[in-house]
Amino acid sequence: MLGADSQLLRVSHIVPWSDCTDEQRLNVHSGLLLSALWDAAFDRGLVSFTDDGIPLASPKLTEMARTALQMKAVTPI
Image (cartoon, rainbow, N blue to C red):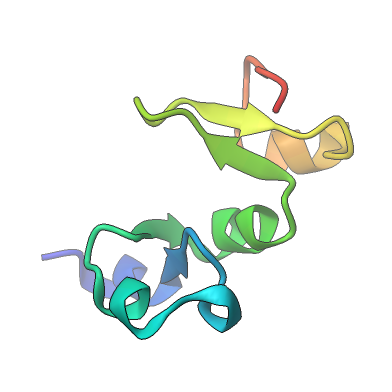
C-alpha cells in the first residue's frame, strides 16, 4: 500500500495517448508510474529512461530542475 503519497503518482504513457492505437492504449506494459514532477518532465521530453530504468536528462533540463528531480549524475538523452 502506497498511502497518501500515492496521490502524487501518475501513470505516464510511453507513447502519447493521442498517438496510440487502441491496442497500444490497452497495453499494460506501455506506461510508467511516475511522480507528478517526473511525469511532467517526461511528457515534455526533458527526461527519459534506459531499458534498465536509468534516468536520462535532456540538455534543456535546468540545474534547478535536476535538483528538484534529485538527479545526481546526469546521463544525456
